[in-house]
Amino acid sequence: MTKTDDAIAQALNADDREFLETLEADRGLFRQLGDSWKGPLGGWAKLVFAFAVVLGGLLLFTIWQVAHTRDPMEHTLWAIAALAVLIVQGFIKEWMFARMNMLTILREVKHLQVQVALLSEKDK
Image (tube, rainbow, N blue to C red):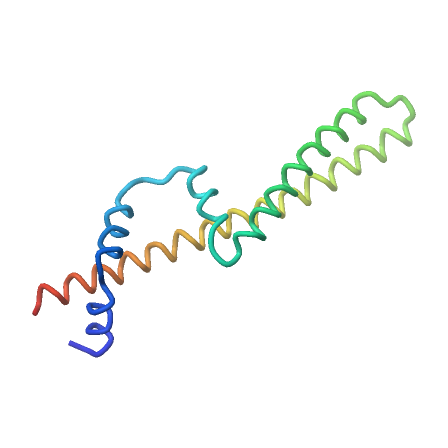
Protein backbone atom coordinates (compact mmCIF):
# COMPACT_ATOMS: atom_id res chain seq x y z
CA MET A 1 0.00 0.00 0.00
CA THR A 2 1.30 3.48 -0.85
CA LYS A 3 1.51 6.56 1.29
CA THR A 4 -1.33 8.07 -0.70
CA ASP A 5 -3.62 5.15 0.12
CA ASP A 6 -2.70 5.44 3.79
CA ALA A 7 -3.41 9.17 3.76
CA ILE A 8 -6.81 8.61 2.16
CA ALA A 9 -7.69 5.89 4.67
CA GLN A 10 -6.72 8.13 7.59
CA ALA A 11 -8.72 11.04 6.17
CA LEU A 12 -11.81 8.87 5.83
CA ASN A 13 -14.21 9.63 8.64
CA ALA A 14 -17.93 9.44 9.36
CA ASP A 15 -18.61 12.48 7.17
CA ASP A 16 -16.97 10.76 4.21
CA ARG A 17 -18.98 7.61 4.78
CA GLU A 18 -22.18 9.66 4.96
CA PHE A 19 -21.15 11.46 1.77
CA LEU A 20 -20.61 8.10 0.06
CA GLU A 21 -24.16 7.07 0.96
CA THR A 22 -25.59 10.29 -0.51
CA LEU A 23 -23.74 9.66 -3.77
CA GLU A 24 -25.91 6.67 -4.48
CA ALA A 25 -29.08 8.77 -4.82
CA ASP A 26 -30.04 10.16 -8.22
CA ARG A 27 -29.87 13.91 -8.50
CA GLY A 28 -32.25 15.80 -10.73
CA LEU A 29 -31.65 18.97 -12.70
CA PHE A 30 -32.90 21.35 -10.01
CA ARG A 31 -30.86 19.70 -7.28
CA GLN A 32 -27.73 19.92 -9.43
CA LEU A 33 -28.49 23.58 -10.13
CA GLY A 34 -28.89 24.24 -6.41
CA ASP A 35 -25.62 22.45 -5.70
CA SER A 36 -23.84 24.72 -8.17
CA TRP A 37 -24.82 27.72 -6.03
CA LYS A 38 -22.56 26.49 -3.23
CA GLY A 39 -18.80 26.57 -2.98
CA PRO A 40 -16.20 29.10 -4.07
CA LEU A 41 -18.03 30.10 -7.28
CA GLY A 42 -21.49 29.96 -5.71
CA GLY A 43 -21.90 33.72 -5.72
CA TRP A 44 -21.03 33.92 -9.40
CA ALA A 45 -23.43 31.09 -10.17
CA LYS A 46 -26.26 32.92 -8.38
CA LEU A 47 -25.43 36.14 -10.23
CA VAL A 48 -25.33 34.38 -13.61
CA PHE A 49 -28.63 32.62 -12.84
CA ALA A 50 -30.26 35.96 -11.97
CA PHE A 51 -28.84 37.43 -15.17
CA ALA A 52 -30.30 34.49 -17.14
CA VAL A 53 -33.74 35.14 -15.63
CA VAL A 54 -33.50 38.83 -16.54
CA LEU A 55 -32.42 37.90 -20.07
CA GLY A 56 -35.40 35.54 -20.30
CA GLY A 57 -37.74 38.42 -19.50
CA LEU A 58 -35.90 40.64 -21.97
CA LEU A 59 -36.20 37.93 -24.63
CA LEU A 60 -39.97 37.75 -24.11
CA PHE A 61 -40.17 41.55 -24.35
CA THR A 62 -38.19 41.66 -27.59
CA ILE A 63 -40.31 38.89 -29.11
CA TRP A 64 -43.44 40.83 -28.09
CA GLN A 65 -42.01 43.92 -29.79
CA VAL A 66 -41.23 41.96 -32.96
CA ALA A 67 -44.80 40.68 -33.08
CA HIS A 68 -46.38 44.10 -32.51
CA THR A 69 -44.30 46.57 -34.52
CA ARG A 70 -45.56 47.83 -37.86
CA ASP A 71 -42.53 49.71 -39.20
CA PRO A 72 -40.26 47.32 -41.19
CA MET A 73 -37.04 48.94 -39.92
CA GLU A 74 -38.17 48.83 -36.29
CA HIS A 75 -39.39 45.26 -36.78
CA THR A 76 -35.95 44.24 -38.12
CA LEU A 77 -34.10 45.94 -35.24
CA TRP A 78 -36.28 44.23 -32.64
CA ALA A 79 -35.74 40.88 -34.37
CA ILE A 80 -31.96 41.41 -34.31
CA ALA A 81 -32.17 42.36 -30.63
CA ALA A 82 -34.18 39.21 -29.87
CA LEU A 83 -31.61 37.08 -31.66
CA ALA A 84 -28.74 38.76 -29.78
CA VAL A 85 -30.46 38.20 -26.41
CA LEU A 86 -31.11 34.57 -27.34
CA ILE A 87 -27.43 34.02 -28.19
CA VAL A 88 -26.22 35.64 -24.94
CA GLN A 89 -28.67 33.55 -22.95
CA GLY A 90 -27.38 30.43 -24.70
CA PHE A 91 -23.81 31.26 -23.67
CA ILE A 92 -24.91 31.83 -20.08
CA LYS A 93 -26.77 28.52 -19.95
CA GLU A 94 -23.74 26.77 -21.46
CA TRP A 95 -21.60 28.14 -18.61
CA MET A 96 -24.14 27.02 -16.01
CA PHE A 97 -24.39 23.50 -17.43
CA ALA A 98 -20.60 23.26 -17.74
CA ARG A 99 -20.34 24.17 -14.05
CA MET A 100 -22.94 21.57 -13.12
CA ASN A 101 -21.04 18.99 -15.19
CA MET A 102 -17.76 19.90 -13.49
CA LEU A 103 -19.35 19.45 -10.06
CA THR A 104 -20.70 16.06 -11.13
CA ILE A 105 -17.21 14.99 -12.20
CA LEU A 106 -15.73 16.21 -8.90
CA ARG A 107 -18.41 14.27 -7.09
CA GLU A 108 -17.44 11.09 -8.95
CA VAL A 109 -13.76 11.67 -8.13
CA LYS A 110 -14.65 12.00 -4.45
CA HIS A 111 -16.68 8.82 -4.76
CA LEU A 112 -13.65 7.00 -6.16
CA GLN A 113 -11.41 8.36 -3.37
CA VAL A 114 -13.79 7.05 -0.74
CA GLN A 115 -14.01 3.67 -2.46
CA VAL A 116 -10.20 3.41 -2.59
CA ALA A 117 -10.03 4.24 1.10
CA LEU A 118 -12.65 1.62 1.93
CA LEU A 119 -10.80 -1.01 -0.10
CA SER A 120 -7.53 -0.17 1.61
CA GLU A 121 -9.25 -0.57 5.01
CA LYS A 122 -10.42 -4.04 3.99
CA ASP A 123 -6.86 -5.02 3.07
CA LYS A 124 -5.60 -4.15 6.56
